[in-house]
Structures are given as structure tokens and as C-alpha cells.
Image 1: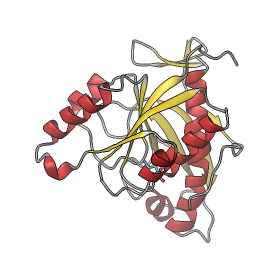
Image 2 (image 1 turned 120 degrees about the vertical axis):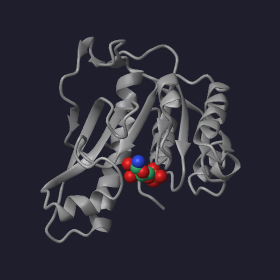
Image 3 (image 1 turned 60 degrees about the vertical axis):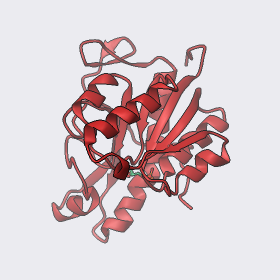
Image 4 (image 1 turned 90 degrees about the vertical axis):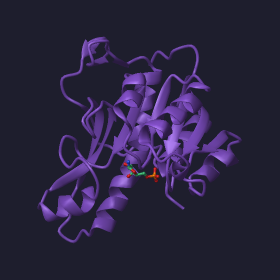
Length: 228
Ligand code: GRF
């Protein structure tokens, strides 16, 4: 895989556990991903996930929503913080806030999210519980570019996880999460290697051609890590 010369620079936004962030940091550390994390910004000062960044001596910042009663003001402050690091990409990794349209437009083509469902199915929250309630046989996760409409941007790559008859939201969610770790890394590897690009017309380009269906990962990646 041909890699771009310089690492893809990232700012990662989190709100809590940060296991996807941890998987990304591990992949970088292991030389599996040609990227560098410039900063991790949390919407909560005490977010557990900040420790992974601190352990890797990466700048961490917390931007508390309570200091910004108006969403637009919060998002403008967030945008300013992010642009201070001039990243190639901004990753949402469990960032539990809805972003305003101006913010999303500003980062168009540079903003990625991981969502725990096979989009366009199950946008929004409680996806594991809803997958069980709806009797779905298959569930999974998607990495997508973010557009103004919630969980609706073009999907780069998905991973599928069978729903077992014995599953609870917790057991299903744990299996999906384990797959997410490899999935986000995989999507970033494709971008770092120049295989996936955001086309100016709002479509994803895969090896120079419009991607008509999301790529699919069927095998667990060796970048899977556990949450502890
Ligand atoms: C993941 O399930 C992700 O898909 C969703 O939020 C969760 C974040 O988990 N957007 P973590 O903080 O990365 O452990």
C-alpha cells in the first residue's frame, strides 16, 4: 500500500471511555497506522479516555458544555481549539454532542465518526437494544464522513456482527465495540494510504473512483484491543 509521505494528523474528540482512541493510539505506536494525534479534546473534564492520551504525552483539553449555554458558542470555541492544531482529520470517537451545521460544514470532508450500527439502519442512540428489539439478525458498526444530518454522511467501511438469540444489549454491544476498534483503524489506514479520499462532489473516492457501497470488513483486525 502506497503511503503518503507525512503522517495524517488527527484531533480526536471524546466524551467518555475512549476505547476507540486507545485502539488508534496503539495502532500508531505499533507502526500499523501512519498518523499522529495532535490533541484529544473531551466534552467532559473527567473523561476516562483522556488517560490514554496523557499516557502517550498528547495534548489534552476539556471543553465543558456548562461554560457555553448556547450550542453555537460551544461549537465555535471547539472549532477554534481544533484549528489551533491544524489537523488533516477530526475524529469523533464517542463524542456525545450533536454538532451544529456550521461546525460540520466547516470541517466538511475532514470530519469522521464511528457509529455502532450498520448505517443507514439504527441512527441515533441505544442501537444494540434496538437491534435486539427489532429482531435483526445482523448488527455492526460504520465509519462515515459527517454531514449535517445526524449519522447520515457517506459510509466508508462497515463491520458486521451476528445477533445471537441469547444476546443482551450488553453482550451484543461488547462484541460490536471489539470490532469497532479495528474498524476505525482500518478506515484511517485507507485514508493514510491514499486509497480513500473525500471527493469534492461529496462522494467518497476509493482508489480514484466513486465508492458506491461501503467497504466491508469481515475478519477481525489484529488491531483489536480490549477495554480495561
Ligand atoms: C462507540 O460505541 C462508538 O461507536 C460510539 O460511542 C462509543 C464510544 O466508545 N459513537 P469509546 O469511548 O471509544 O470506548
